Image (cartoon, rainbow, N blue to C red; front, side, top):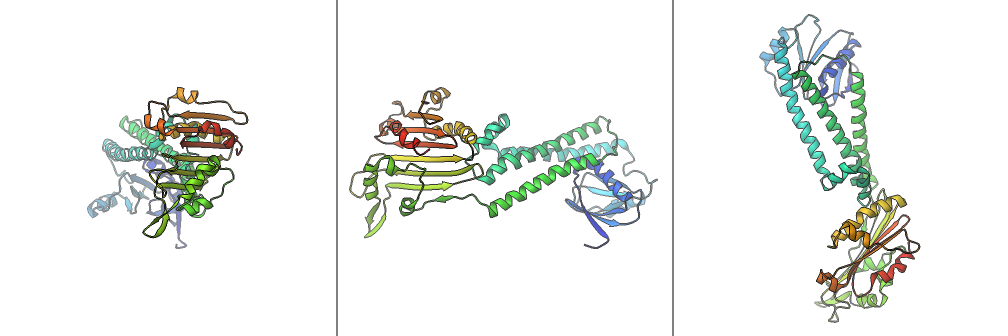
Length: 416
């Protein structure tokens, strides 16, 4: 950059065109004369302080006809070319007529161009809300609960939902309000050219810089500080997985586990392979709200190498959530229970959720539910769910098999 050029960030948009004009005129009085308008960066040449007048037309055209430029120049106005969403003209002649000599025509022109920009801003705000669509209703009505509902999501996603998207929505709504207010004033002919710009500039500066810092911070986090995610891809890896806080199926039902493990490997085409009728996986994850999210998932179907399945329709899934605080665990649990029940096709009426709760010494919360006789298939399999919480730990167990899951509460409680 030349020593005679100074670059400045323009924190004004089309809804601030009159404040931007005043800002440019103030810089001219300090000897900084506009030479180029970028999308965010403006170039200024050092010169003698002058009472330069600026006028901004809310439209950016790729090419301005030379005949039109000649008309402006004949009236004393010079065009500053650039890539911003507007066209800037200036004059050092204090007696030069305004680009629009007809006030009515000027207002109609500004209203038409600003209305197009208003529609664009509304579409942007709607699209940002659409990004939040899975939980937009919850976000708007109860943002605090929505915050805790996201506790098991990836850290960048939590940041995106709770910080950047809401900030962008508020920013868009602020712009929409300014457009509507300006258009209304122009149409009602109550608008008076303001000479203030500092407050508007500082307010825009704070919001824009906050969005930029958050976006850069999110990018750095995704690249350099990823959440730790580990998922097994084979029986060997799942068997080698260690987690002293998780109740493994080998502890839950040792005798059945011995039979399942003996059938994990089968022969096919003279090769040993993982039994396709057995699914056995473990996982580990963590994020900014959860210090640990670990699980074990086991299901047995159809046949094993010895012919009959060890336990027909057996399934066992345990998920341990270890939050950074008991408050996070409790608030996350309240929303997670409904999601878990829906995932298992249980009736999730509020009354049934209340009825499944029971007291257990040493636990802050305990609830048990079993498939009803109305769901013949799930009832025959013995489908059950258990929800337990103590302090910052929250455990979800889904089980289909012959054991009464509620009788195992003590086993799970001993590890919490």
